[in-house]
Amino acid sequence: MIGSQLARFAIMAGVSKPYLFNSSPGLLLKVKDFLECLANSRNQYWRTENSDTLNIVESGEGYFVIPRKSPSRFDGINVPFNYQNKYGYFLLKLWLLTGESTYLEMASSIGNTFVRHLDEFEEGYKWNYWWGVGYSGWTEDNDYSDNTPSSPGTTSLASSSYAGIDLEFVVELMKYSDVITSNVTERIISTYLLDSMNFDNVSAGLLLAPFSSDASDKAKKLSRPLAIQFRYLPLIAKLIEKDGSPWGLSVIDRSIEGHEKVQVSNISRDFVSYELLTQGGVLLVNKNDLNGYSLELTVIESGELQ
Image 1 (tube, one colour):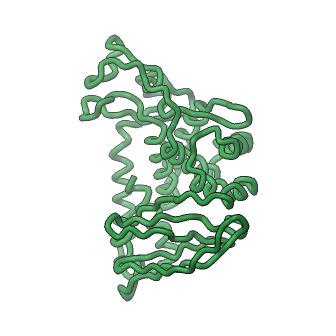
Image 2 (cartoon, rainbow, N blue to C red; image 1 turned 120 degrees about the horizontal axis):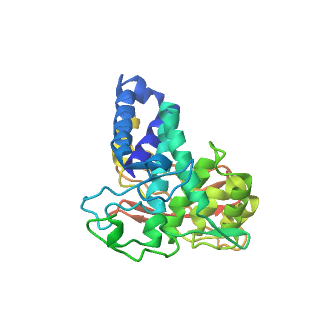
Image 3 (cartoon, rainbow, N blue to C red; image 1 turned 180 degrees about the vertical axis):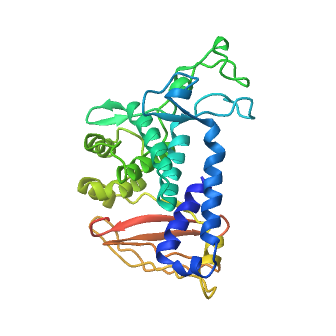
């Protein structure tokens, strides 16, 4: 969601581009006010044990419900995991930006809900796209939804993209909350290593590499493209570049065993580019789609991912 990206930008700019906010008094406050307004507008749809009209959470858990009578097919029903886990990620960034503990508490509650629904599979986990009544279904007698009075529920596993959203939230929550215990962390890593879930192996590997050398090793051996959308960066570039000049995109020639030698390339964009270096490695641009403002990236890694 755009809120999480704007919060990430505000945190990043405050650290690496402090002149952005120093030269524009009140700008950071406006960003914070906007993001907190965005968060507060969703509070009416937040449910905990004391306000759980669907009877699907336990103590210390929380979830969001799709507004009743809204123009949504499943109005009145709890949102799927990827929806609220993405929002949980936003709440973590908002907590880091504002220091308001309520946002961390809500993110932890979302984390508790997710962890309880992880199904152990071998040494790892499997989990579903939906949970609660979205998973189990409902009838007209329940009176949960106007637009869909009854449904058998959706019982499929989370797809690759949705599982990746869930994983991104879990990895972020690992850093700041004890909701993600060491046992859960180990099982999440095993889920990736054993292919228990249909992750995008490159992006999942990048997320888990700092926590596991085995995950890092697996990611190094992959060359599947990872699509990264750049469509919003022109707006950011105008703000964080003092002199208005375009950024330079640096691409470094690297080769590793099992891969053909990579050609050195340099791609410039008239509005923005980005230095995509990691410690000990590089993200190599192998396709440039000018019409879609999209770059496909492949990890060419010769050292430990950080």
